[in-house]
Image (cartoon, rainbow, N blue to C red; front, side, top):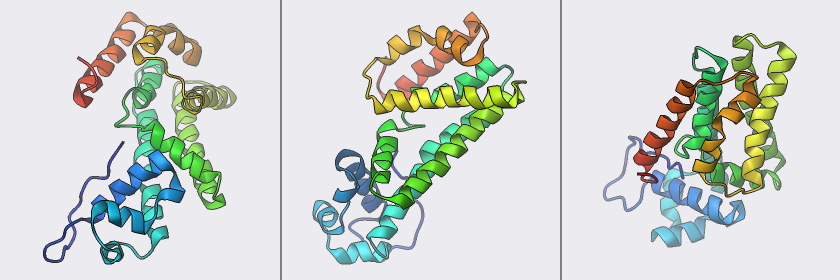
Amino acid sequence: MIKMAPQEEPAPGNVKVTRWDWINLALDVLVTDGVESVRILPLGERLGVSRSSFYHYFNSRQDLLDRLLDHWRDTNTKAIVERASRPSETIVRGVMNVFECWADERLFDPRFDFAVREWARRSPQVRGIIDAADEQRLGAIRDMYRRHGYSDEDAFIRARVLYYMQIGYYVLDLKEPLEARLSHLAAYLRSFTGLEPTEADVAHFSAFVGKSGKRSGTAG
């Protein structure tokens, strides 16, 4: 889970929990139990504080939910847009930049994304936010292809194939190990670019996966 990092803010006296404690617990509950379980009283009981602590930081439950959506946009969507917008010598390297989001859950948290999409089934407002984020993500990937000389239509379709494939991968909850997917990296890159990746390309991304695993404590 991509937690919200504490930021400086005025705090009265001896504060037992902070704004970030409320938000990060709400994030956990959203992902594990769904938005209907993100309720003030149960959250306060788990934190060991009263409702007055909540209202010191938030105007309402909706205020807290809005902060969760802001955090979702500032993490999952921002990561894809930033990686797709990075300068790259070739489209193969550009696609690999986007692949970093799928390889490192500190950049893109699929459980968080899925939880917000489930939330959108119950809320037209959140559905609109999801649609806007998907358009922003797709637009950034499409523009990446355009920068490397693909026609408008080709860039649009390739962006859709790349993005929808990955989102579908998460929705289907496939359990294929990252190592297995990595073994098909060259084929994926050929499929998404129409070009043959070099051995250096494959080695570069493999090194990124190794480093990200070590940083997160999931590998080697």
